[in-house]
Image (cartoon, rainbow, N blue to C red; front, side):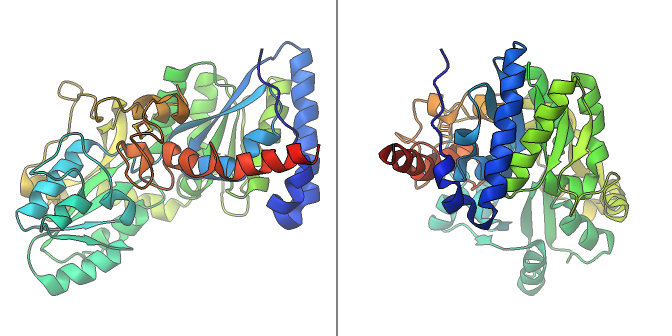
Length: 397
Ligand code: SF4
């Protein structure tokens, strides 16, 4: 028997602020549509939110608690830090300890590898051991610092389509100093979404990432909707965006449709940003790429084209990417991030969750970034806001 959800509507006003009435009405609409579907035998409707930021909104605002028992939200592989292969972390640790300056964003700074390299399990630990690691807020910051520094530097380039223009534009315009090398760990989201849908099976609807779709356009999700007969809604990141997107998916499911709809119309067009896509294609080419804990997904990564090899960290330092033959599950022993990332299990199914793995001391990669499903659940899931709202609701009877 599925556990009955508690009615949290009394606290909608507090947590959805000025949009309380709208949120309440959409939640009622979702409830009515889900009831109709249940009457037609749909006891379990599974919706995958691909993106880590959507998982954050879903969990932080307790959206799962507003959904009827037959509507389930599962998270997908949309956290770029979580899926960055351990060999990139290992390589950057080694280079940092050898005196090459490594630039990293703050979340990747704490990303744990699988086995310690020279006693360091992360760039943070490498820095503590004397390695040259600098946390930066942008690629431009790294370029400025590298120009002043003058010696070999590597930028750990992690990200999805959203961040790609920030790399492709300076590269395309020859703005990188000769001593700055770009280590591409860039990943493409639609191939990973297709891979996850294949692995999980039986997903009834997709919430597609709004920020990625600003670049790619909503059309990027059309082949997936077609292939899996699954409706998709490109969603924004406010709680109301997600509620509207869920209602849109249920509407399509009840009609037997599998179209791509755009909820995030204030930012996303069907064809995306063609100028930016041209800049990305000019600098990068598609390649098979490893996703941490998951495996090698065909044509799911970007590598620098030959013309930009003078700034390519892989050719400069002889870094080899895992291939289908060489890839091994690159997670610390006992970490179940691969399954969490694919939506096969929940973070709470991992015996290490909030025991040996916490946001303060992450053991696995999904516990590091604010977009990692385990980190999101640790902060806002078991305990946190959702339980607080539930407790207040129960107290009010
Ligand atoms: Fe990995 Fe930690 Fe998540 Fe378990 S709780 S799956 S160890 S990140």
